[in-house]
Length: 446
Image (cartoon, rainbow, N blue to C red):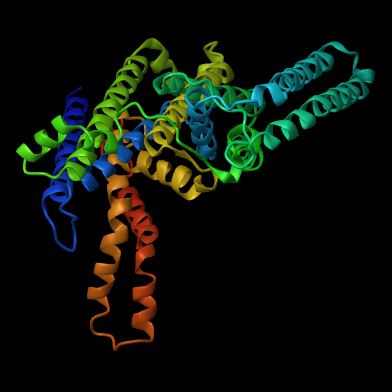
């Protein structure tokens, strides 16, 4: 028992030390101007906001891996689905889009999902000798009906005001309502993947999530009727004021002057502070719910399944069903982070969803912070994101020092030219160091 208390005390102190180190880094970024730090609170708060969003995404991955040992290799796809929520809910309706083909698209989607449901019923209810022919016939008929409804509707929507719109548009609702919708989109996709892959070996889940992630990105790039595809979707509403609105407010300008700041700098800081408060509140709510779930009988059961599936199954636990639960919940949290991110950016750009950034880096955050520990995942996310951003600045400075003994041109020019890409080496080095000296993460699971 004493060893357990000592381990918990060590973990608590380590968490405080990591948190203090992160706070010092952000203070230096906001107050110190040199080759290492920008000396701008606008920059520091921008890094913090994206770090908070990344922390939400890391919590979702931590739920799947840390609670249940499920390897999700398609994090980027669930982030993209979450990002689709604000586009379909908060953006303004496109005039003429629904009349052109909106109802027919809905009918096509109903037929498509109905075909899948009918195929499942056919497989379960038809005699074995006729099962495969009946399944093939059902899928063919359903596919033909789906395409007959879908293709003309999509062509009509994309032809509607194609220069500035060409998409179905949104509902014009408040943007905060779109965040849970984005989470629901990601959770629904996770349910479909989980129903297929979670009953198989764990490596099949990794393959399935990797594939579904790329499929989702490909759909967003090519289906212009949905969110304008590669034309990108801009003008997504924000839950906070715009900087130009604040700069045009005499009261705000006077308040900024009283602090010795110009209106442009003050407006940027104030907007980022509002975002930080909003994202921080969502993050704390997710952590609270995650901690309550982890310490409940359900959470103890999930960890028991993670540690020994065979024993848990022998005790009568539905391992596949519980895996499906946590996979859907974790993916929904990841989708929530995607909705928050696209709201802050005000732009949905399918080409920007890079698996290196939105899958690999999120996994690095969880591993560095400590899988199975919610606070560890959060601290790891903020720290790794800070290092990811600053490595692009620190890399050239470090390479300049390393190459000082070398003559001008030749190898030195090549090394200096590749220095901005030092962030990839830096993340690999951080991961290796953590795995070597703290294999359970900076703040390991209790």
